[in-house]
Amino acid sequence: MGIKKVLTGPIDWFMYNVLSENQRKRLGDLFTDEQKEKLRAIILGKQQLQRQELKQIRYHLYNLGFQDRGLSELKSFYEQNKYPYIKRLTAWELALWYANDYSKEGAEKALQYIAVAKDGEKNQDQLRRFGIVEAECYDLLQKKEMGKVVLQDLIHIQPHPDLFLGMANLENSIDKKLDWINKVMEQYHLTPIYFEKGNDSTYDDLRTQSSNESIEDVPKISVILPAFKAEQGIRIAIESILSQTWKNLELIVVDDCSPDGTAEVVKEYVAKDPRVKLLSTPENSGPYVARNIGLQHVTGDFITVNDSDDWSHAQKLEIQARHLMQHQDIIANTSAHARLTEDIKFYRRGTPGKYIFPNMSSLMFRRKPVLEKLGNWDSVRFAADGEFKRRLIKAFGKNKFVDLNSGPLSLPRQSVNSLTGSSAFGYNGFFMGARKEYVESFSTYHQSGRSLFYPYPADKRLYPVPEPMWPKREEKQENYRYFEMILVADYRDIPNEAVDKIKSLSKTSSRIGLIQMNKYDVKLSNKKIRSEIRALIDNNQVHMLVFGEQIKARHLVVLGTSILHDFQRYIPSVTTDQIKVMVDHFIETDITKYKKNLDRYFSGPMHWLVKDNDLFEKFKVAYPNEVDFLLLDKDWKI
Image 1 (cartoon, rainbow, N blue to C red):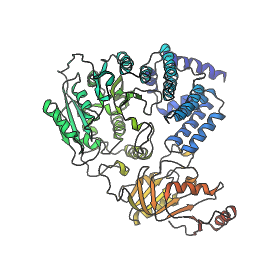
Image 2: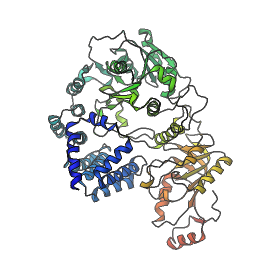
Image 3: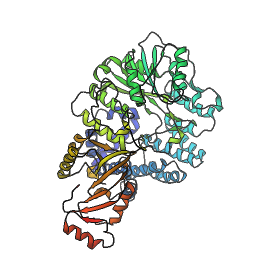
Image 4: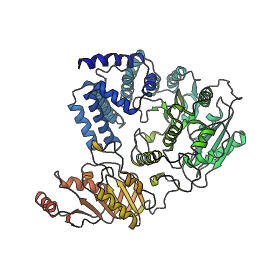
């Protein structure tokens, strides 16, 4: 223990007092994730094991949707832990859980846990994050002045742009908000911004102050702007691009068959500025098909994207393009952003205690090498920015891609209504449902060694994705998809016998849907679904169904009962003519809990089938009043 203290003391002092957050990040980039874990294990010992346990609880709580048990396990872990470092980490996780509820009750609970997280913490970056969330909680409780005290104390110790944006959130007037926002701009040597209508302004009144700078004799930048139902917000996006200091650009707007006046608004700009072009998708297909159509018409040396209702700072293109010009070995970069709500408040989307973070959709890349090697974006309806970035890094190397520490060069519009609501297909800092399945599917493809070049248009997909991501969605009756049979299992841990049955069924049944239902088991956290099952999914005969879908089926079969022990949120809604539960072992705990969970997932008459006579008799003895839904089925036929 004494040796570890001798080692960790100087390391902690150097890491958190000498190095900045960005320097620590660059140092961390020198090591692989596996190497970093080994270093932590050497330095922290048993605490590292507990840190991993906390990570697994968090994974089950967020990614897998075990909200009841996950939160209960997190609280137990907190109560029982004796290590101050782990206790603080766990208190922080509990604080975030309650703070992200965005309710007064949640804010009160979050503040209690933040107090524990702060106690004994020396890392100034971590204290800053605590303070930002603490101030948000005081704001929710209508105690803004207390929030200001928290942030001002931190600013006095170490001024930081995230703290300035936190202060902006606590101001009521636009002028006072601007004072804090422009402190951020000043820190990053950016031109100040303003709102055109003063205190009566809205998001759409955002502007960059004129610097009279005009950069013209430089490479051309192609900006692709996909748009759908953007009549109300597209003007600010277009005008912020046309007002860039980098004048040598083309703006290619691709209308995704909007039912409103989006195209008419764009035509106004086409008539005024020869740099603006308007294209259209043949049918509504999502932003990435729109981007790919734009990609076929680009003429610039560099390519980037701007979303249809997002404001960009006038220096955004200049800063990213200059970086590429000055670093000829770099293939692509991104700039940073801070999400801004319509009532002029900054929002930390999935980034605890941070408002400024890399903007995935700001990716700017060199046209020739990237188009030759990678081709196009994946033609899905959402989430393809992450896939493109991973493909780019795999093709060119991690050191060819840079997230610039640029300051907030975009202030993307965040709908106030979407803060507390959680879309089935949205992203809140973790992968779940369709996005989780998408990442696993494309990662399998990337690791296969096959071509990373994605053609457009493509004859067929290179790998399957969930139906909600298809550019051309399946025709439905009353919003339901129909399947002959649905098989529910934890495909990470499914026995060989079941795999063989599924393979056989895939050749004989008309159409099969698979639902991944997880066991609460930390040993399986790092496992993906079995490769034999992944290989069967073809979006034709076999489909992976995801949270947010509505399904009707003739038969639904649950392969094993362990997956019914704890309720998990991210399961698609299914109505079926018949439910069969294949009971594979004796249920020690209350069997009615399993049945209730099944009722919450699926609608239809159910039978629990027990293959073994001795097991069936054991159930009858243990649950004499509750086994009317159990049947003996020695064939155990699916």
